[in-house]
Image 1: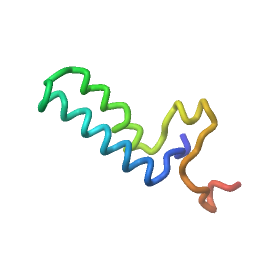
Image 2: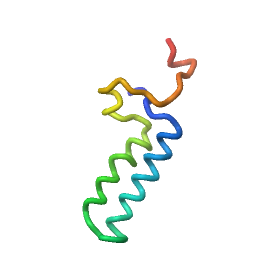
Image 3: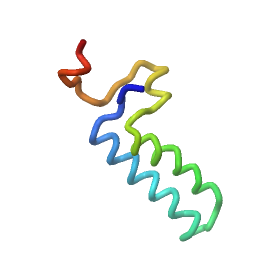
Length: 67
């Protein structure tokens, strides 16, 4: 599993995930906030299956990944 989520994308995903998860405790206290687990987890592992399917990659090429 190769990284396909860049650093800026990772930070945005983690922040959005945490914000959505906070909705389970604060605000409307809805279980819909659990949807925040998806961007949080994809941000933490820096791999997004949807990006893989679409052929997208937001992380720069590293010397070890060029071969």
